Length: 195
Image (cartoon, rainbow, N blue to C red):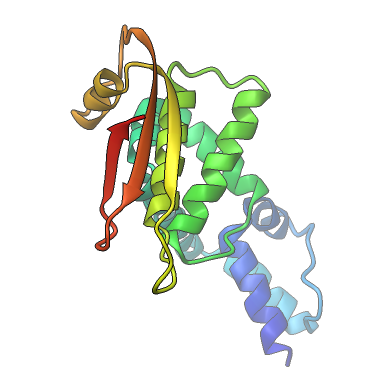
């Protein structure tokens, strides 16, 4: 019995929608399995319980984004976030349980998407701010200095971030080039000041 291959196939059923669809249609094969294991994996693909497991898995991944990039997620809105997250997940298998790793990868994905045509008002400013926050909150070795980050806003950061923090989609934020410097204190709390 090839337990590791079977487990890898099962994980792939949960995490890879394309593989799951091909298994359900009988068009996919998992390497290293006996015929019986392949049949069992195919039966698992058709099990209603697998749908629940996939929802739990995707919910866990979504929670990583919502908790680490809350302003970016709010700015995207429910529908656009769902589309972008689904595209991100289709092209990037989960590689870490760490929330920050998933959030950083999603932020980089959104930057790439933005460069290739994604248009969301204020996304540049909000994404740069939250990426800087992720950097500030990264654990660092004892005795090392906390980084200082600079975020350049094209729009009034107080109005923009204020509306998002109040749960509002920002509207009519005036252009106001502003540079903010951020640093983290010994407790890991981020602080900001105008540059």
